[in-house]
Image (tube, rainbow, N blue to C red; front, top):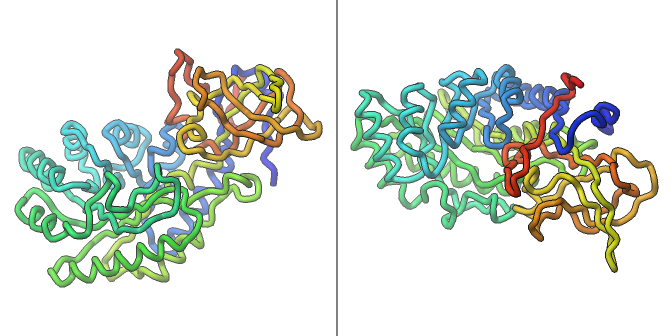
Length: 386
């Protein structure tokens, strides 16, 4: 079903702005919780995907936990109502104040990414007379076959600890009475749309678990991270990702042991399809061989195309005319400020309203003020007030 946009209301708002369809978000949350509950899986929403306070509040009320990668995200999650016992803290560069915040709030777990980090957490926890619950983030050497900027599970990535270091890591944990190993954490990448990379992850996870059991180490928690992609090309046909298939493959190939919990950290797949960036056409510029649609939104509002060469479906909400071919660009003083080249778009005119779809993840949260631009406004489908 094609998403309907309240164009008449949009005409009374200052562009560019983010527009969130709360019905899509609610349906996505219903789907992920229903499918997870079938297998008793635990879901932590990856706050980095979208930290809008209202979005966070809706997700927390749905019963999800939070996956945070900074002290600021921990604070935002707590403020939005996520209980501390459902917050996990990842990130390759945790500052002392962020670790202390997690300790003071008694968060569920620190996902640890290096031996020096282990030592710092152990020392800070000991100073407070506390025991920090930790999971070791392992690089399973699985290539997720996504853009190199969002692949995270190989030896050459800055994230995580290589499997070859596991004995050294376990010995280090044992040297601290202020550390408690509760599980293993994996995350092989983002925007994964084929299940094959996950099959390789299962093999490595099972091998590692078997090896640790030989050392008489039982893992209470296995955290498989996130990574499930969304359909950027067909947001109306596939507004809700296939969580059923995603969880089913984990259930099939990695059955949890008695007393063991399995965790996931989806972000993009929760919020990606509910958000659109709404912009207005400033100019239609005629070049020698091409036409340009110049928008009042640029990579300051949505950086993914410039950063990742990412694709977003682009719609002209104001025109029912036949399609022309345009390069859709922004106003930023950089050659990389291009949303799409050779884009089919209903004939565009100055003042037309343009929707850049599937922008709910890594859109608003990555907006910036380069060129001294204002941050984009934010509106919700159930509460636009003029």
